[in-house]
Length: 572
Ligand code: GLC
Image (cartoon, rainbow, N blue to C red):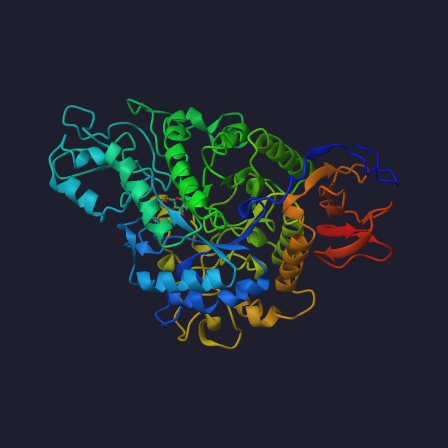
């Protein structure tokens, strides 16, 4: 136990230095993730679309974010929410047209918002022209060589080539008519590409060029750690979850995640982006890795100067609501990224995880749940929201880049009462419903309490039913309302920009006790913003010369006392 002193000492060593000069936009940006199916529906079919996004971009300008990232809107049978891409150079009719994309990007740019789009290189859809050609061709053909086809084991070849399991449950192999098998680390509608194949490498560079020429500012790269598989595709026994989650086993212990060979792919992507950036110096392009890799030192390899600019910090997202854990993960993240000169990319929610307003309302234990169902223990909504606001207030004070997921600024919880019949995440089916999957965080956005579908679109249709509480939390119920989660986010984002917190340095502050995370964000000129989060049950007095409160995630108790599950920013 650190003794709780009255005077926190403020001169703790800087663990992360401030950015020199005026950093490029992406190093400090707040990016808002839009899940296009669920943000705004312009035509009333119950599915969000690009014109819907265009018509709501002003809202994001007012929120104050710097950029948007769009999950896939490409041609797709939506077997995995669009992460099964059938044509990388086109827009699916449910989302609109390429012209709608151009109009959306133009409006966004006009508002000063950068546009980041998703690219899905690990696998295509089974409906992609390449995969259809592969099915029509012979074993050993050039068409099959773009994917990972193998003969099966056993005398008749009717056992899969190895024991790998799909991330969504079940075997990672599917047999085709002539008896061969193909690998799919995800749904069997998502065959894995063979990244040893030069045609595959050339194709993706061309896809990047296609979108760069349309003016996008960057890419979020899906499953960036999965593209290369160990030679010989050896069978492998997945260790029990607790071993993995304690971080004792690096991700690359598996033969398909985080193989060293992935690092031979991205330098060519980076060179391409750098080439575009050099031609338009006021328009630097960026790529951000979705790589579920541990430990953080291996994650940092993706962030070397000739690879990704950014990579989501999932250790932070997965951290339990415990002060010692949070402090350790923040410290470790900053230090390991500093070794390669990369900013840290903070994130708490996205379309793949239980929203943090629900996650933090559950007992804090591992493993992290993959969805919550009606029969599961339910999150404590009040506690969850309180902690979520505190967590975001802690996060947005940190130096680096930050990603927000649509609806978190309203404090939306997951929908936990979705009936089985409406659930669409393949995980739900392939795990034989032992995992609920990710539908609960993908429910359409509520814009207005009284409108049909809470203003998601002009009709009452919504591809997943919206819980009643989404009406109470609708955007129009929070706009301009003091103390609402929306106004909290606006204030945080505004102050973060004004005080240049993204470019700041970080020094830990001691003396508040073990259940508090406290740091100073210090800029190059020595200007300090103090951030204090109380994760304990007891109120914590804010003693010492910390400055005045400039924003708080919830009301303070009298005489500058910080209640449980609350974060405050102070400045002189
Ligand atoms: C990524 C996406 C997820 C998708 C998976 C397969 O993890 O974020 O939604 O299911 O990749 O593409």
